[in-house]
Image (cartoon, rainbow, N blue to C red):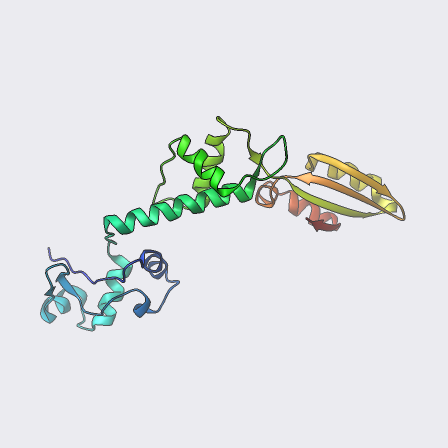
Length: 217
């Protein structure tokens, strides 16, 4: 079998990945050149007849697109290490944004989360999204430190004439009642989980059907 290569710009790993997912369309943002090689490191340029036989065309731009879409991305050790370090930082940032200390209710800094990840010897998976890995990290950190998902504060405004009925429906959906105000309208403030979990549990859809006025803080 014959293999073909085309050189990508240094540090263009994420751009190549978005191109492969049909998000990035500008080839010049991805490639150093539109030339196709048999071996890039040795400078061996592919012959036109070999390209035509393998790709059904000798249009270099079209061939480069096919290589990017169907080929395997080769990353240097230095570039791979840079990518993993950035992913490590991104995971720590997501964890810091989503979590708090359950005793103080205050968020942790990104640097502290990074140190905690190193303490548990967390290894980044290059083929897994940072969001998925952040959830894994949260589960693992709970075994060694005080950490929990931050709650979302919601304020509900209900018509007074339907206040009691709607309040009884709301209570099973919520964690903590922080305060209740009665006037011509009934206002309630709640502490909840993050919005992602809120939507996942279909609570948000239930509230939409109840047609309440909802403010998220």
